[in-house]
Length: 163
Image (cartoon, rainbow, N blue to C red; front, side):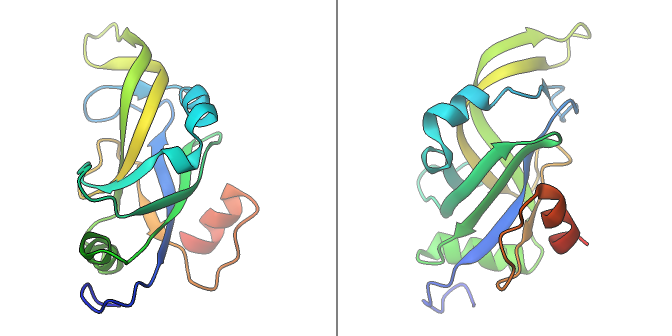
């Protein structure tokens, strides 16, 4: 699909929007369980998929969002039905963007003793964006092959898609 072919072809993606217990570039560290209340309240359907945190044009839908031992795992699809969605899908396919970034409000935080950043133990998650430069190095996405069955575990996903 090209960005302007109008086919409406979906692009399935998956990856980690946040990695636990790892300092991001702003000095923040997110702990396991930080997203639990927000996900219980909103579910995947209540979290928006944006491009570069631009709320004007959502680009797709998150089908699954959950915490595991590593971080906040996400799986979703770009609809391809809008110009922004099709263009974002094309950028992902070409390898121009592969980052993920979370938009949230801190509910429970502690300033780190170093004074750089925070330790976040509860956040109110609003959106997860596809970005060029993620704040957290491990926050990356990959394309899920079209014929790939839904992996039963995150490990199966990693073995299939990221191998």
